[in-house]
Length: 635
Ligand code: WT7
Image 1 (cartoon, rainbow, N blue to C red):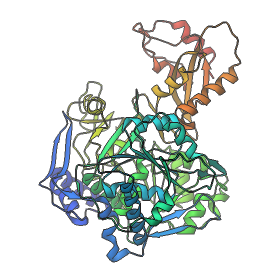
Image 2: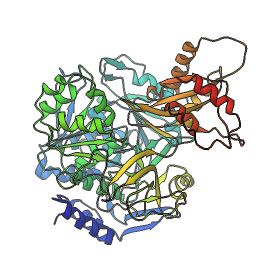
Image 3: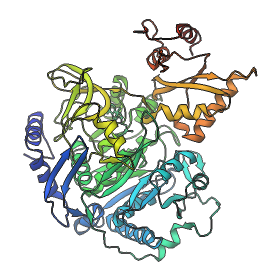
């Protein structure tokens, strides 16, 4: 029986039971099997969810890039590690071999060192999906610097917040980026952000769009000439298994984004294990995950997971709609993709277009399809299954989070029978449970409750950067001795899980996690706005879209509402990014509040959902007349 290539449901249950009965032996076996450790661990696991303190492979030493690159050279030196597919289909794809990847990462590592970056320093990476992004991430890992990748769609202000929170010493960016038929001035955004980032002493700039940009003397350096003269070897820094590998920001329901801290050994073991298992990866497969490396999906399943397995991983710079809606399918045919991993929102957008786009291409290389990021609705699932998978390619609906580091609940292709909208069963080593309103674990099925995990797994986040108390409060204080995911789920009588969505004020729009509080803060900065409240409502492509209720200040001045709507969305674009724009903005004289002054979001959600037949318990509602007014004028 193999821990990896699980052949049927019975075998899954055997492996699963083994992993739960004795997790330490299970993970020790996985860790021994595949990796280069410079020093072995003294203890597999130490944990205490009350603090919380979680340590995997304590005492072990390693470098993750040695495992993702050097280890493969003997047998796979000339194999393509990264297959770069540019935005423009007429530009040639690049096949970057493991040998070449090693050279680039070593040169980049030397450039970082030369610019004064030391082990433990934070480096912010704000780059488009180009090979330099992969080199930058891996070069940080090679020298033991902590990378903090910020998705290059975030605004200057969002970038500055993230740089300052972890006091990054350096920013790595490019002159610009290509997205479809647009060119974006990335360096301009970085310059604006850096006006308020005192910790940053240097900026490395990769060339991509050849745009003329301003370079600040003594701070900004073109990457290319530095790489050219840099030494082609770099002995990997020896890291502790529990040394931080990276910080990745995710939205919370309130306050600042949370800088989730991931460490080295456990993260490597878990992402490598789940990559191989969930995608049933085999040596000559060509794996394509369409996420951006700015999100956890890209960290774990474009870079670390696939590279730790010596796989060929596709890095796609563009968008699904350029030059037309057949782009994804064209790439699958062109590179003979074997596993394709994307988001429900992309599937829904493509399902709206003519089927000809899909049918024009040969998709017969596909063996496994995956989705991630939000619940997939039944219609989208069937479209994906029928038209992309031709009814014979298993779909893995993978549930996980930035905080979990790797896939947690997912079918295993060919072993787990799938049911649309169900993420199905926990992967080996993962112990989910459902908790009821009284905070008690629900035994037995069927059941519906809040989804928690009651035992540690190797790739779980260890802290929030600079705020361990918040880590504890957010994830470990709601339910005793359990990690709380923030999601609701139901479990059917066969033990299958179906994720029903967030139970907090996080809204997932087009697969992007958005906290309502920071968006409300941005809206409230508009001089005409007195107060606002934002909720989600169902949207047929985005999954959810944002509905803003806005109270204007009483100035006596008459303002054009459409202009105000534009200005508010412009402000959101500047403060956070275009992904957080409001789909609907309703101006209202008031918001439903409780006697203690809390906004009753439940009512606002119902109105946005156009479901006002039963508003539930309104006994604590202070101002029922406002609710009537909002319903009457709802958009
Ligand atoms: C939230 C985490 C993990 C990669 C991308 C998102 C939702 C994620 C699924 C799924 C239903 C899902 C959850 C989760 N989510 N995958 N297969 N089915 N919901 O990472 O930005 O940290 O978001 O995404 O609500 O809590 P993230």
